[in-house]
Amino acid sequence: MKSYLYLLVLIFVSMQFCAQSNKLQFKTTHGSFKVILYDFTPKHKKLILDAIKDDVYKDALFNRIIENFVVQGGEHDYDIAQREKDLPTNEHHRLAAEFDSRAFHKIGALGAGRDDNPQKASFLNQIYFVVGKAVSVTDLDNIEQKKSIKFTKEQRETYFSKGGLPRLDGDYTVFGEVYEGLDVLLKISKLKTNEKDAPLQPVFFEIIEIKE
Image (cartoon, rainbow, N blue to C red):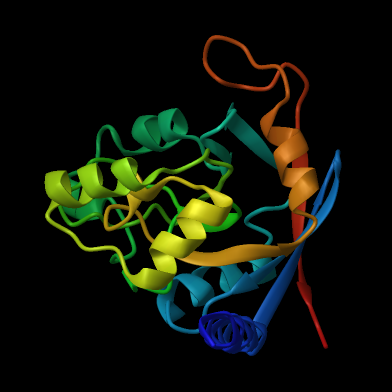
């Protein structure tokens, strides 16, 4: 009976995510993968859809790659800092964080980068994908105690079965996930990099909205 109920839960969760409204294809120099955007993080969804229409990510690069951590692309932290260095803080444009228990840092999650601003607001033109690592019961228990948070049953089961980066939950906005071609993303995450985590060979990508 428990197995039957668990199967029903998995089917319900799968249907929930398949029903999301917008899907993207990431075409890279190492292959393509597909992403679903969450309807329950609407501001971040709109941000990237608008960015695609405005060619913000045209000839974009995955410019920071850390195996077992993230593959990051778009505007680099350094470039943002240089652009904003002479601007007052109130002119550092950010998007307010959108945290939802259904959006967490499992492997394949799509998140928005940010600096150390206290509001945890996102950069407008920087994204990352979680490649993460295995997660144990002890890992989650320690994070819960340290951050005074509580992982849901779904989060715990997903982290135990797939892995990820739970320590980032509640600090960075997740607004989508890879649903096809995860192997391409994982291959990119293993590319050789320099001391600044930049790949030795440029990894270009473009984003196309999938019309169904």
